[in-house]
Length: 103
Ligand SMILES: [Zn+2]
Image (tube, rainbow, N blue to C red):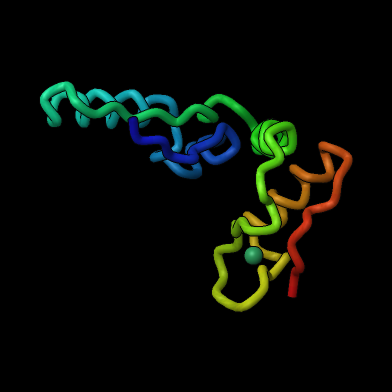
C-alpha cells in the first residue's frame, strides 16, 4: 500500500487536480493494474479538510514539531505562503497552536 497526503482542501476549486478523489481513484487503478495487482494507492484524507487531518494527528500524537508544510525554502517556515496560512488555520480550528517556529 502506498499512501499519499492529499486532503480535501487541496482539491477544492480544482486547485491541485492531483489531490482530487478522481485522481486518487485513477492513479490507484493504474498502479494496481500496472503492478500486476501487487500495489495499491490510497489517500485516506482525500475527503477531509486540513483541520480534520490535524485533529487526527493530534489524537495519534503525531510529531507535528517535525513536520513541514511551507512552500518556501529556508530554515523556518515563512508563515505567509498559502500553505503556511492553511496550516495555522487548521491548528487554530482545533484550539491548539502550531508547534513549529515561523520566520
Ligand atoms: Zn510558508
